Image 1: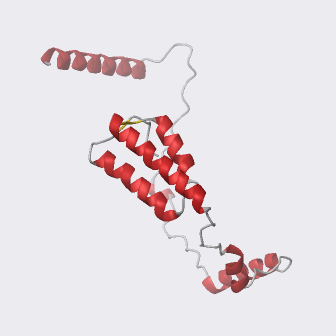
Image 2: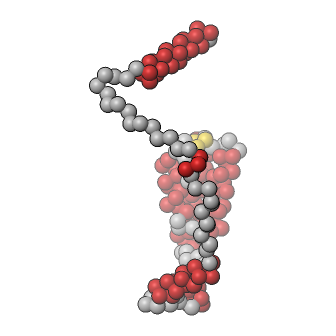
Image 3: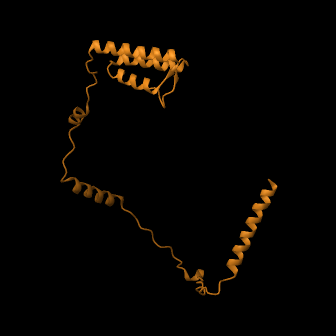
Length: 166
């Protein structure tokens, strides 16, 4: 450690010597430096320059006029109730065929059972479960996902899929 400090100190010292040498000795082909301008305190103005005052009311009026002129040709924004009706989506779930949902839930349960017995959750398992849960109503989706995440959290199932299990 001490040798390294000595080496760095030597490099630093030699760089100072080189910088000093280059600063003191000019090259012969260099152009002479321009004379330095020296300013005395007496040549500077003694009075402070007046500061500009800003009339906030005038600025507000100018900005307001500019915005009004820009908005004259544009169409007004829709009424609040019209905008809220346009963005409101139907929060109800789509109707699921009970027979298809029952088969999909059974397939998802079997998929989880096999994976838990194997002790590993693969990328193929994740893809299959994604397809299954698309065919299920919310409560059955939550039931399968609760089983999956519960098994992962209880260390019954190791996630071999990259990222999240689903």
